[in-house]
Length: 207
Image (cartoon, rainbow, N blue to C red):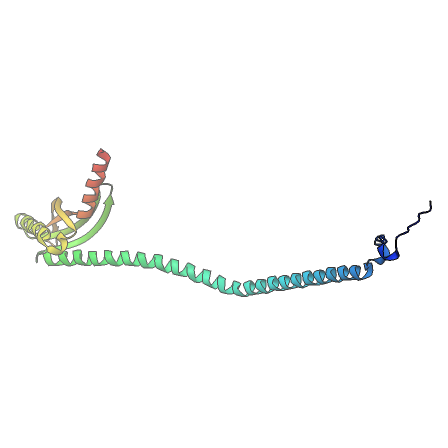
């Protein structure tokens, strides 16, 4: 079909040309994308290398600290052990002072014609006790009176009274030593704190 346009050339409507694929800058765009991908890949590789290097460095540092950590653990164990022993020694020291006072009180309370043959300590469910075994020289009446005075002296001694609440006569028997009359006696000393503990325990059991 033939179209005749009688309008002047300057008034004629020009048809817009469609962009052809060959007109687009495909090669520069492709190169730019490839360069971007390469740069991202390089950055990723560098980041990975840095992270791995840091991890290796941290691992080496941790391994270098391992002997020190082992020494610290060993030292800590020694400290705990020493602390435990110190507490035990502290308790033993307290007990030693206690027994030193009791033995000093026993020595101060002993009469000239009385001597101890032995002593023993015993703990039971109802309390703790100190048993004294000894002899009093002289005829039976005189020796028996000496044992009575010894019991009173033990009860009145301030050092012993701090720890012992009562002194009881368990037994007294006539005996002899190198043809001399003596009396063999046994005393029972009751500790205060164990008596109190037994009372508290009994009270709790009654609730």
